[in-house]
Amino acid sequence: MKEFKFVIKDKNGLHARPAGTITSVAKTFSSKINVICGEKQADAKRLLSLMSLGAVVGKELHFEISGEDEDKASEALEKVCKEKLG
Image 1 (cartoon, rainbow, N blue to C red):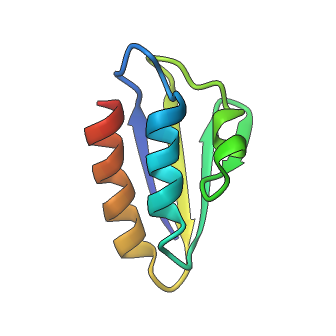
Image 2 (spheres, helix red, strand yellow; image 1 turned 135 degrees about the vertical axis):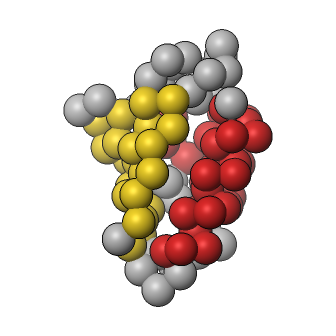
């Protein structure tokens, strides 16, 4: 399993556009991708699940990725977070 954490720096938090990008990227991988924010957990491949985290600026997202392509998925998702939420 691969894991990484990312603190949201975008003043709008995890809104529809970056959440949609994360979901689109996550769906290209076969690995299971969970995102944890506080006590809430979401499937990164489901937009509404990701949006339900209510992640705002300053909150930490903890990604847990497990599967055959976890290395590539982790790299791609970290890049998306830095570009869209950084």
